[in-house]
Each structure stands twice: as structure tokens, then as C-alpha cells.
Image (cartoon, rainbow, N blue to C red; front, side, top):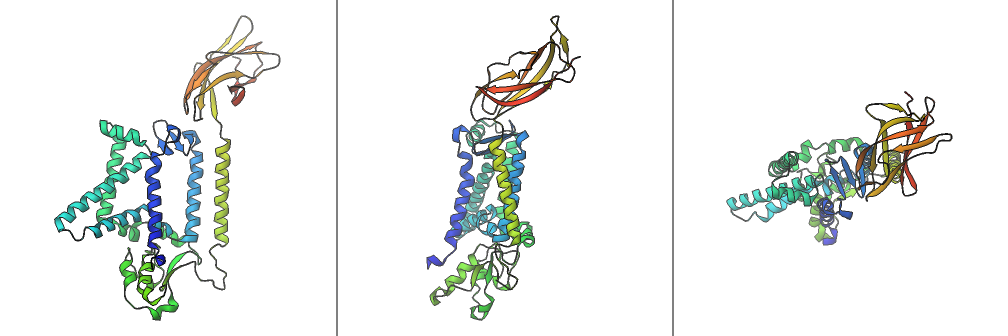
Length: 402
């Protein structure tokens, strides 16, 4: 009767999600992490893209997508996240699994092995968190050299301590009393939200065996109806099916999207469609912003001295500083050019040719703008950043005459 059980599917989803979280920091296409926040350069490495701090508005869009996806999924599938994907549930399952395997050992040996298991899990979780800020090769090299750094070291220690205390003393109590997700679910769920339900029409068939209560990790009785502590893990469903399997019955507990009453309640209702529409709009906005982002940028400001010079030949000279950034994934060579200005001779003086920038690098360059004859007040010249024959960025240069 293995085909009746939910547990293998739930465990498969848990293992897949856990492996993804652990493996992503080690995936380094082109020598860079797939997903990592580099605090030193204030850059987010995001699946091949490199977002500097001034582009973090894209990260805000990602956060909004996650928030609306959370609301959308919760409205449709309830607490399926809690029972199938949440790291807290996975850690609790691992701790319970180890406790069950060592139950036959003497108490001292069981306590010692339990301590080592909890410490190992805590260290792995803490290290995995730090890997999203320090690439694993650098992390291990710095650990071996004793040069992890104060911030990373404190983060590693505090995270490991919190996870250890969670495994040793909290576990499911967090889901029952502290986790805000269940409370948020009450505000987002509809009549058509996926829940685990004891079929009230079959209440008289129940054997009162208590298998569903014993199987529940949060200790609730599914026969009492929907409860905030239920994490939709399906353990009670499997327990009930096991009991009724000899009777060729599927049990009295099942996943349901709610009753199809006269109010027309369905899993996909107006609220779900509204949330889904907002979610699609945000995804489209992210795709548009990511595909149209500039491959290089320049920002110009007047030199600190603000000096303006008039030369004997009638030319006017202004001084500037320009900040260049290569947002691409490979080194590139740029040049600075001034757009032609009819009636004037425009010349840039300084290191404005063959400017090579490494991937995701930036540089400050000082240069002078020479105009002949001297322009009238309020004139502007367009400064262009050129790579090959292509203008990749431009900025106006306000010209001061005195």
C-alpha cells in the first residue's frame, strides 16, 4: 500500500529544497557565485547578473514578488510551505529521525550522539548562511587561516547557537506558538484554500484509534476541525490510511480545497486572480528592468576646485570628474568622447582613451573640457561613453563660463 502514502513525496520535496539551498553557493558559472551578496563591493550576484548598490531597486522588486507569491500560494495551498518546504520543519524531521534511530542505545551514548548530531546540523546551517555572503572556497580558506573576520565569525557563531538551541529545546513548539506564518494564513485563507480535513460525514466510521494524533508533529487532533497549529504535512493522512488499508479504504482524512457551496467558492477566486495578476505584473517589470539595464554607466560632477580657465586663443576650459562602471561580466575597454557641437571646437583633455575596466569594476577619472570659442552661459555638451563603435552611456556636461 505504499502508493497510498504522502510521506515519500513530502520527503522528496524536502530533500530537493534542502539540496538546492546547500548547493547553490557552490555553483559558480564563470567563476562567480550563482547567488551571493558581496558586502565588500556592495554587489549582489544574482543568477548571472551583478547588481551594485544603486541597482538594489531590482532587489526590491524581487522582494515584492516573493511577498505576493507568498500571499498567492498561501491563499491557494494554505500551510503547505510549513509541512513540505520550511527549513524549521526539515530540521525538526532530521532531529526526530536521529532520535528514533538511537532510541535503543544506552542513555549516556544516546545523549552524546544527540549532542554531536545537533552540533553538526547547527554548524552546517550556520556555514550555509555565511556562504551566501562569502563564497565557499574563500570561506574554507579563511577558516583554515584563522582569518574569517569579526562580522562573519560572529554571524557564524550566533546562527549556530540559535539553531542548536532550536534543535535541542524548541523544534515544533516554534510552529505551534511563535511562528507568525500560521497567524498570517488566517488573514489570507479562503473557503477554497487547501487544508487537511477529517471527513465529518464519516465521523461514525472512525475507530478512535488515535493514530492521527500520535502521528501529528504538533500534537493536534485533526478530528476537531481546522486548527492554526496544523502545518499540512499529511502525517495524519498517512496514519489514517495505514489503519484503513486492510479494509481497502483510503481513510477518513484528505486534502481538500474546501466545500463547493452555494457561494461559488473555488480555489481560484477573484482575490486569487487579483494577487496572481499583481504577481505577473511584478515579474514582467523585473524582466523588463533586467533586460534593459545599462551595461555601463557614467556619472559626472564638476571638479572640486570648480576652476574655469580662459586661454589666450579664446578657449574656455572646465574641469570634471567622471565615475565609470562596467556592469558586464567581462573586462571591457571604453573611451570618453564629446558630442559634436556646431560652430565650436570641442576637445577632451586627459586620460579619456583606452580605459580598461574589469568586470563589475568602477573608476574615477579627471579630465578637462576645452571649447573654442568660449560658449554663452547655460550651454551643455553631451559626454559619451563609447565601447567599440557603440555609445553605451551618455551624460550632459553643464559648462560654466566664470
